[in-house]
Image (cartoon, rainbow over the protein chains, first blue to last red):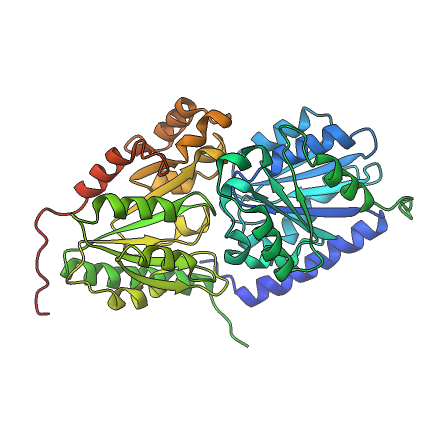
Length: 223
Length: 223
């Protein structure tokens, strides 16, 4: 019988996150951890961001899914480096999984690593992957009450992308009320309402993403 | 230091689920466990179901949320019995939580108990609450790929409600493809495409829900 002790698992995750961070610092790499519910539009946001920034940023993607390689296949078509992580049931990525995926990316030749977490607005927010920043993804079709109901991810994130803005007229999503709730939870949070379909708001989001990447990446020492 | 051993927690959950089941059998009560991602429309589906069936079924509701009592407040306005369960961070309900909430409902005078789980398409599917049946809730705005990506809940469920059907024309959701994927995962699954807003499909769903409740509930013995 396998017995896992929760406290040990948490300590092990923190140690692995530190190890990932050391590896990434060595390459001067920024890592974004993209967190949102199922169908919030994380992969589509990534597709459009890559299409808009692909000539200025070399993306390395780690695709987290419980099963399937569909999202990785979508992104691979865009010519970016993608590693698929299947959790085989687990509801979030942890630092050990990411630690296995990172060396599969050409770390010396990418500018930005984006980890797309498993579709879940709850659990992924609790696990440090060794990333530099978390980005929360919430679609307007999910409803205005979500920041208050699932506060941790919005509290931990550096930015929040409000997706599917083209569907706003057909919903009762209250953009200004949500901005207010987000500001109360996290005054420093940058909020980007976007529609990947029409392109609305994508420019501001891509500019912000670009600013997260150091202008002059340090070459990896000793590699 | 508190140390929780996962195997013990699972065994404890199974024992508590059996205990809940014994209590519910005593009252001849059916319990539905409603599972879906954040913003999939679980509370709205419940609101409309109560509005349509409230004169034929006495509902008892257990509202699972991490924080807030917003959903419970929405349902209480409809005059049904509601107990709020706040998990204070946990990503799913477990049988012990439901075991504490059940006696807070007037079990002898309700016909059907519905547990609205925490908004999460992954973790709640793994925990038996002592319910009779699980119902998966997926909104068409979440995308056609969700059954394949999050198969457990669709495999475990007796019915799947596809919500926000009024938004179908504005999405690329492929209803027939999703029906096919659901049938492959779970041939016995009953699928109900609905719009709580327009009422489309709600009749068939409510008729099915009504059929899950025994015609003659057995009076609780010894109470």
